[in-house]
Amino acid sequence: MGALKRYFGYDSFRPGQQGIVESLLAGRDVLGVMPTGAGKSVCYQVPAALLPGVTIVISPLISLMRDQVDALNDLGLPAAFVNTTQTPDEQSMVFAQAAAGEVKLLYVAPERLETGRFRDFASRTPIALVAVDEAHCVSQWGQDFRSSYLGIGDFIASLPSRPPVGAFTATATERVRRDIVGMLGLRDPSVTVTGFDRPNLYFDVVKLETKYKAAWVARYVADHADESGIVYCATRKETEALAATLNQMGHPAVAYHGGMAPDVRERAQRDFITDRMPVVVATNAFGMGIDKSNVRFVIHHNMPESIEAYYQEAGRAGRDGEPSRCTLLWNESDIVTRRRLLDNDYDNERLTPEEQEIVRQSKRRLLDGMVGYCRTTECLHRYMTRYFGQELTPAGAANGTAGAAESTCGACSNCESTFETIDVTRVAQAISRCVHDVNQRVGSGKIVKILRGSKAQDLAWLNPEQMPTFGMLKDVNEARIRDVLSQMATDGYLAIAEGRLPIVMFGRRAVETAQPDFHYEIKRVERKAGGTGGSG
Ligand code: ADP
Image (tube, rainbow, N blue to C red; front, side):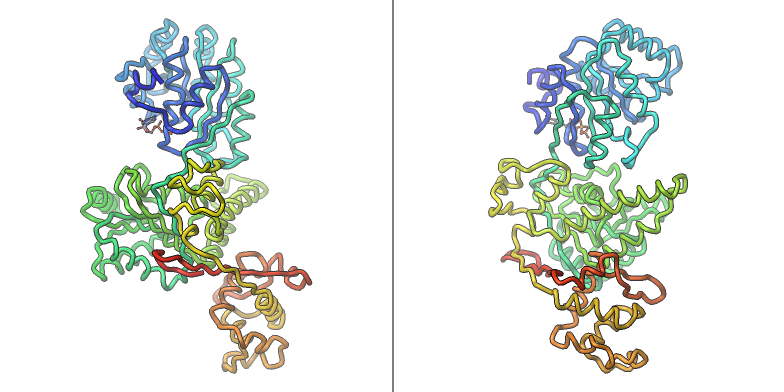
């Protein structure tokens, strides 16, 4: 604690930091999993200040090294870096200073570790600690794999007296975490996952048909006219259309996407950051490196591809700690679109077909996590933090009240809603039989008409009156049948074949609907007083 105040001027540790610092000081390896901005650096900088010897910090971001090193020197912690931007002479000088004990933290890019000079230096100099930043780069299962990270484990093993190793990442998946431990050769590491909950954010999930989404956004923006917010859309076209709609209705908004001319894009960004423009309607190209603290709402007009993506984008709300709202608008067709994008994603042409299938499978799993967030009835804060591997304790839960299962966090739409599950087994079975009756040849509109016993002319060629399912769901309203049909498609009982006209086919789980124990439900959401509408 003394060092924290003395060098960094902070009065207290943030959650997780103290435990990590103490483990490293005690000589134990650690794996620290924290989101960006939670304060990973302090976790190795404090031990570096206190332990005898030099701490080696391995970081992939050469561009940031100089800033970090300058900041540490300003704080009175002697630091230096070696990387490719320096001449051999400059590098020699840094090594000499470090060997003489004049440097406490030495920042290096992973490529350096393999050079004879660095190995030579490390074998002769007492190393206090090795800190590996962005440790997920070691895993081929992560988004940011770097082959240069593969040498780190070897380097650590080659050190004459093995120092404690701290590995840090913001990555959630179990697979990547296992790789980090295995490939860096961490020994019985203490694993700390923390900082993912953002209690000042209100999480809101609203199921809404696509045609109502723009109106929902417009109403929200109108009701919060004095607030700054981001609306994320899936495509460039959507951002422009929605921004135009908002402007027509008298709500100033600017579009932002990767296809715009750089100067137009920069102006949009500047206008938003300086509060000249309250709302930006953007693709996920917006936000990288944007630090605006007073964003009061982030609305997702479409479902993102993963919880990781959602957390990062929604997390741009409320950086100042003030109450802010993160709303996700979704419907079943978002899921279908996402699945289709994923199956047609061949941008990885370097990979073999088998490897592509592995990538696709892991992307499918990520998408399942996102769909789970839309469908769950549990506390959304709890769902989100559990996804990242952090269990909310009662004290750590949003507003400190989400401890017991029956209590509410007061900061998510699920805790402020009641849910009714509706048994739709009969409807699902009828839909499935009808798809059989029409021989998987028509779209969902015609299926609904046949089930409702419609006499519409465009059905005549099918001879629907002859079908066993004709009129079978006369008593069920059209919207309900459509809802069940969509959910069956996303659950794999049906599949929508995309062509000029989408056709409803059987999905991989189709046979289950004919089994005697088949049971199917949909969820209806009822907001308690004060909620912002929406129904499922
Ligand atoms: P990360 O590496 O996890 O993205 P950083 O280490 O860059 O995060 O820290 C993010 C910010 O939080 C920095 O501005 C840092 O100064 C601040 N910070 C870290 N720890 C504390 C603390 N205990 N008290 C106050 N501020 C902190």
